Image (tube, rainbow, N blue to C red):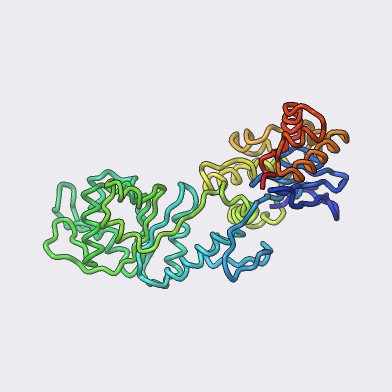
Length: 399
């Protein structure tokens, strides 16, 4: 994602251990340092805080689950995704994708779980390509068809099998022979169709409606669901034996709000898809960038793509600003007064000094507010008021 010209200082801020947490301190940068849009001198950081320094954005994480054999520092420009469209800075997701690549070469059935819009079908297409299977990739949304039509769509029928069957139809299983059949929202599959699907997977053959002899097939099944299929099976709301057949391997895609670190990668990929000629020159104002990074994206990557599609059209040759984004991202942050440089007022010098003193005392006294009050000769409630006003959490200093 492109922003306006970088205005970060060579030494803009520092982060150090403080008590049981981490403290950010502005290094006197001309443009200031902001945490969650509030200018700070020093502040204790909470997991997920958005730090801004000269219109460069950082996401603070108290810890990142690492994976053996992977570097702790990654350069996004050097990332090479094993699965197109799924480059990531998250070690856990990268490890999941590597496992999926290994499984793709086998005939094992795969279940992909994740919220709507996270890219489950895109991942299924990638699995098909990696598998090297010679047949086609076909897809069916199990929740989009009436229960009465599911069987005929999947297994096909012979002419005259029912009223309206004027000719033979092969069905998706036979049409996907030597390829991959993607069953989206598999949890919506009606009970009677679940039984027929189980037989097909067990026997490797289908019995079209109106036929008396089954037809052998060679189809790799990948299914997807926005629900916990294992939990549904345990609760008796989905056939457990079918679940066990489908979930030879289960992959889970995180929601977009849980992979904000990948926002730049995802936005860049979507812009190259939406406008290949102009993608590298499209930039965002700081307010627009904050909105993209702060909004929780209930529709995930699908919603983000629609948001960017509209923004690119509305902005034309201009920077994409907050006004070009839909209502949801706009509501995620209130527009700043004036232009993007008109950021909230910094703490006064006296407040910064008071905050630094409180942080030092809390560190020395392991977060004990009463002990801090005794040192300062103040009432405990006064210390609590200062802590709230200066956004200091005493609990993070406890050891």
